[in-house]
Length: 188
Image (cartoon, rainbow, N blue to C red; front, side, top):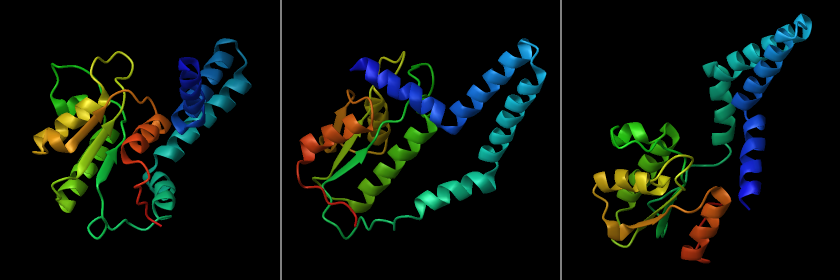
């Protein structure tokens, strides 16, 4: 099972823009060191062009906007919500750093949005679920790091469900279903 997880992560790396750009760069460098200059120029030029295209704000914002505009914003206040699930997204386990420097940008945004929704709904039995495994080289799970942020925001441990075992979104969904069961209330 661990091999499948690792294989999925490796394949995902090569499909995402940064992985594709790095792969093209390494291929270009390989050709450069082997004195195949025409192919080196093609691969290195392609990698630089893709890096520019994907990091240029009008292009990247346009791609994100298309994804974000496919669904309407969910009305949290007028629904009977019992659980908010914050998915893990990485951190750097270093107790010498401040907590805000340990948590990845994506993970911090997810956590802050979960806390914001929790505070807007403001029900006593509302549960905030944090999942996410420690990651490579970390001792503390991403779920626990994110829960520390929730505690700073004065969310009680009684309202937190923390599981640091799920390694990916699929495992996180299985865990959430084990708690929530068939009570899912998804937006239409």
